[in-house]
Amino acid sequence: MEVNSEKTFYEINVTEAFRTVDADVILWGEDLYDAKIVLYPKKITALPGYGEIKERLVNAGLVYFNFRTENFIKFTVVRWDEVTRRIYIAEGNFNAIWKYLRNSVRLGIKIKQKNGESVSIEKAEDIIDLSNLQRKGSGAVIKDGQLVYEAREVSESERLALGRKQSALDNQKNRYFYSKFGDRYHDKDCEMIREIPPEDFLASTVVPEGYKPCRKCCRRVYLRKACAPYVKQIRIVDHILRKQGITDSQLGKYAFEYGLKFRVDEAGDLVVKGKEDTWIIKAFDSGKLTLWHNNYVKTTPEERYITSGFHNQGMEGKKLNALLEYINDYTFEKHLAAEERAEQEKAALEYVAEETNQRISAIEQTKSFEAGGGQEERKELFGRLKNFVKRLFLKFV
Ligand SMILES: [Zn+2]
Image (cartoon, rainbow, N blue to C red; front, side, top):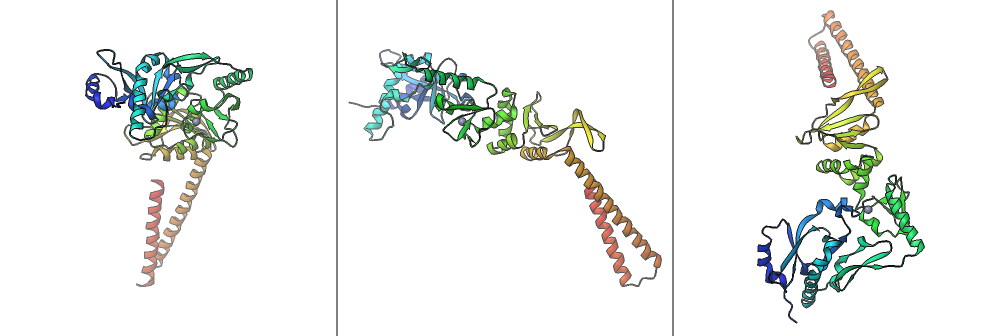
C-alpha cells in the first residue's frame, strides 16, 4: 500500500487556509504518534494541575481531512502544550474531530514503520488520555472511533475510598497530599494527585514526616504557604518573584524556614510580613528596588508599638533576595542591640579623641622638645587624630 505524507502533499494548502486563523502552531495528525490528546469534562480550568500548565498553553490549529467533501481540509483550534506534547480537547468536541483525525494519526504510525523507525504506540487510540473522564459508576472508552461511557462495576470499598479522596481534597484545611507508599507530597493542584490510588491517598494540614516536596509542584506548595490564606495572590506574587530570579529553593526557605508572607497591593508593590514587622518593596519597574518599613513609636527605651505608614529603610540598589534576607534577620531586639553597640563605640572613640587632645596640649605646653623625638611624637598623635576623625565620619555620617 502506498504511504504518503499528508504534510508533504497539503502543506501549501493548509498554510494558506491558516493565514487568517489565530493559531501559533499547526498540528498534523501524522506527527502525533508521540503526543497525547487529553480529554476533559466541561472546563479546562477545572483540570487538576491546570495552574501548572496554563502559562505554557498556546492556540494550535489541529488539521485533519475529510476527503469525501470538496473542502477536505478541516481544522479545530485547540490548546497545546509543546513541552509535554499534549493537546487539550473538551470531551464534547472530541468525536467530531476524531472521526477524521484518527486516519491521519494512523498514517503517522505507518510512515514511521515504513521508514523502519520504532514508534511507541500500536494504534491511533493509544494517544488518547481518558483519565480525566472516569466517573463513579462508568468509565470512558473509545469504541469504533467514538468516545462513549460504559457502566463499570464499582465495589463498595472502591466507592468509599473515592469519596474519602474527594472530601480530603475538598477540605480547605488540608495543604499536603500524598500516597502512603510514596516519599513526595503534592500541592492540591498537582497533576500527580490523579495517579494516587484512592485507597492509598492521604492528606495533611502539616508537612508529612519523612516526605519531600514533589519537584513538579513544590513552587506552588511554597507559594500557597507564603500567600495563605489568599490563594488568589499566588499568581501575581509568583510573577514578581520569578521576574526577580527567586528560585524554588529560595522560595521554600522564605515560606517554611523564615515564615515570610507575601502579598501584592493595589500599587503592584510586594508587601512582606516578617517576624514582627511589615515591609513594602517598591519600584519593581525601575529595577532599583526600595525597602519600606512600618513606622513605630518607642514607648520606653526597649518597647514600641507599630503605627500607620512606612519609612524608607535606606537599602537602595539591593536585589530582592538580599532584601528578604535582611527582613528575615530584622527584629526590634536586634535593632536595639545594634543601636547600643553604636552608642558604645561612639563613646569609646570620643574618649580616644579627648585623650589625644590632652596629650597634644601637654607636649605643646612643655615647649622643650627637641627637633627629633618631639616631632615624631606630634606626628604620631596627629596621625591618630586624623584616623579617629575618619572613623567617626564613616560611622555616623
Ligand atoms: Zn506534585
